[in-house]
Image (cartoon, rainbow, N blue to C red; front, side, top):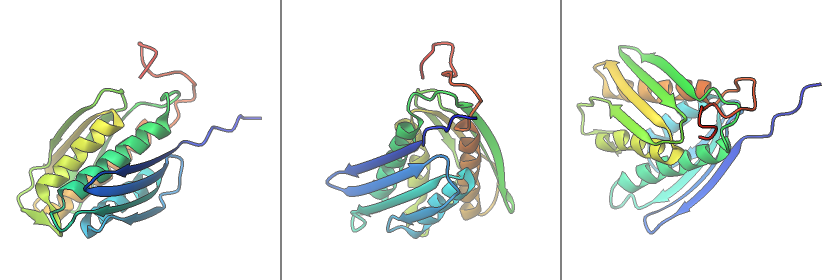
Length: 199
């Protein structure tokens, strides 16, 4: 009889003078998402992330959107990264590394992730528009940076090609989802996947 793996769930509540974010992340989920950030495009991207990573994700944010979208995007990324870090625990028995290409029509994105415990984001989206929906394009790159820092991972996001910025960003989020799906999956052991013995 096989032992039941302990549920990998991360819950975070982040309160600042600018935002209130709550996150519940289930790594071994079905792709179910309930997202409400006040920013339609961000909701769309986070829903795609959960669906293709096969995470169950509940995320709500009340932010100072009367100022702009920056604090909401940043704090959602920080809270989600913290929830991922919490759900991974000691990071035993995970594959640790993941990479994926994801196309969306003419756009093609590549993401490589290492759940190393050492934050190191490198993001090259090459976006041309100032905004997509209500989200500034500079804040979409900042999302990946903040997520990597809070999630304690090396994260490389590169857009190989594409003309439509919506497609380019969505391909990047889907590639991130697929890379994470691999990296958090079981390698069949209970070992920490590092020569250091700790991540």
